[in-house]
Length: 461
Image 1 (cartoon, helix red, strand yellow):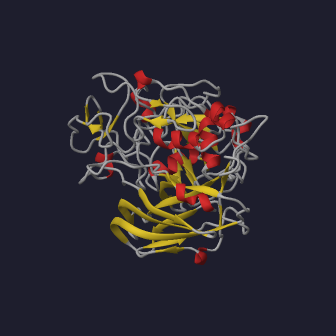
Image 2 (cartoon, one colour; image 1 turned 45 degrees about the horizontal axis):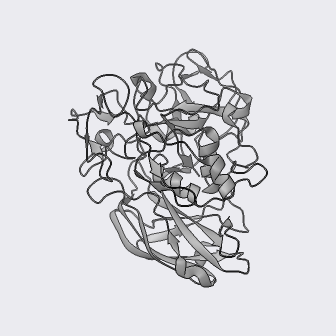
Image 3 (tube, helix red, strand yellow; image 1 turned 90 degrees about the vertical axis):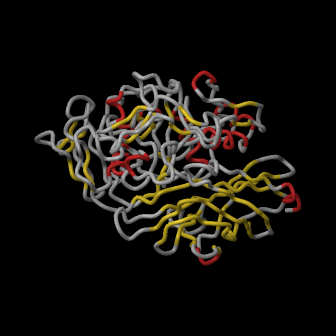
């Protein structure tokens, strides 16, 4: 591993010091034949025993490039947390979902209750199954939020095509991961769900969810760490007039606005990114749990838990890591982008743009557990319930690798649906306001492979 002197570092979610997101930074990276060491910092970390009784975390995974062949591969990690090290107040958490032989990544999280910044904590990661050769490494970190195991409600009794119980329009309680019959979970109007087998993720079990939608910087870093033919198939056309911009050519693409939410993706783009990251798509049931938490639904509610909303009409620090809304937000209102008057930005904003010092769940536009931008910004692709391709999804995780020649650049996880299984949730900068409601299912029939300048997504594990 002599060529580690050319060590590459990728900061997948790095926002400015003035605002707002968690300013994730990975620095001082070094390597030996069996370990990777670095320092990690991020802002506004938390672990709380009171509601919402959860914590944030950073998902860490590592890629290597063979210096002789320029081939990229995922790096296996020891599956034993005791073989890794993290300074206080952090701990290493390995969820065991990759099996006993190797972990595809690990979580860094607070080991005890606390709130505040993580500053230059020392981390040492034990890498395994390394072949002989010389390699460069790239360390990736994605901010996540724990979604605890627990019951929740589907549907709000009012939103278009909302889920409902079998006999009326009331919300439907989900209190386990057992099979849900199509006779006990219905929809108010169109696109009723098929029977959901036990293996289909209902949202009851604990998961970790990306705190932010996939950013343009994250996606461009992904392209740069692929082979040429993989990157060619996953390359997404830039939309300068819709606030998605990058320059250069593979493997040196440069994101002009890395902090903004990624858009214009088809299903294979998002699914390949999640497979490569050892994550997976979320289901539309999980989307409602992540947004609403255990609270009883409010009719037509947005992700921040009420129906009071202020539309973004102008921006401060446009195009910078501190990009945010300049629109005055009324007390008790969340803020979001959507279509209509007054005119707003013609494309996505910085992920987490509404969170500022002193904001709470409502004024920052956050879901119950602290996940950002679930209502507005970009519409999110999820695994739906309307087709058999969707309902056969088992929640299997990506393994860090995507397909190679002769069909390069595709997610290759057994049991993941293609685009025929997708559903769009959460609304966007181009959506009518009603699409921003947590329970809105208007776009449950978008089973196509077309690109839209308002479509993005995020992953879970």
